[in-house]
Image (cartoon, rainbow, N blue to C red; front, side, top):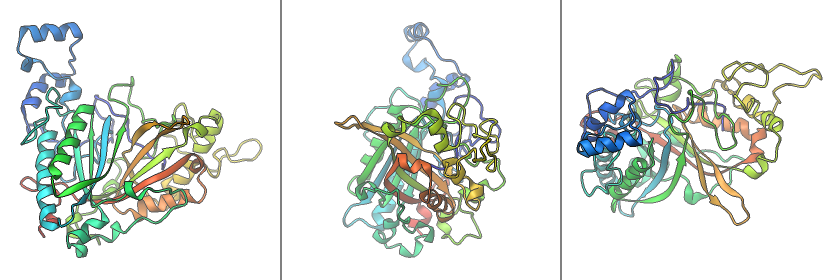
Length: 432
């Protein structure tokens, strides 16, 4: 879990330099739900008594949505949604394999259906056919739906010559205990929203749209802190209680696009990947029983940062630069040589950086009381070899945190740029 972060989800204005949706466009997608939610965009939330009075005095359609439900991301744009937006409160990751006999034609039809459904749901509308009504009372709730292609997709569709070199399988790592049935896949979908029912509604719609063309290979559910749960914006905490990822690259940085997105020209990637990105997905189980036996001081030495506020052990605040050479009175390094934050720093990895948008997960408790819980690690980069692989190889050689985590599933997916109006995601690949 490299030491990089995304600001905590919230409903207030973004901080300077914070990632915001590049796909938003006021005045677009004014659905019935969005129209109902415009009054709530000012932040008005009715209390129980006020809500009851509102329903008594007027039809339900007149009751405004809260600002949380009214928030909307746009489907069309330079990049796909779900990459630069703030962390959603709920999420689903799901991979599909094309059905036997399905090829390029079926894949194109499927991406056309999925894109149309995603556009409607992100605007707060119902699906075009047989909507389940799960999200009937909700607004868009910042729903994002993102699509990607796995390594195996290209052979299945006869498009091997269009497969990017960057999509070559990830190398093996010593911390891997991978379940092949929960790894990789022909197609990948990421769903995020600030409402659990909105997220599930989108998941169900995507599954139904797959029809006979594709079948689910694996599916994982995750969560983050809900917007407004803290008095001020904070970096999210993981299930170990640590602020997770303080050094995430920010859009305000001059090299942000170069690190995260494939350029429209001058790249060795195929043209259809212009403005796209590569997503590495890892299910990382946290061995919480072992971790929680450590003292807070021992936990901080594993990470290299204070647990309370994320500041480096060398002092300051969360954003203070870590002094890697600082020693204590005995001459020992204040930040241990194998501390996670030290090893994962971009300046210790040739400038390697990735944009992390993870989810926590909890999939139950075993008979012995051991929780199956941890991190659904999702990171974005223009080049996974220079991004994730470079950092993970370094972590693999001596990260103190590796004793307390286990990588149980893995995938790498090519996520094309956003669809222009009149296009579907992946059209430039599938109809080239």
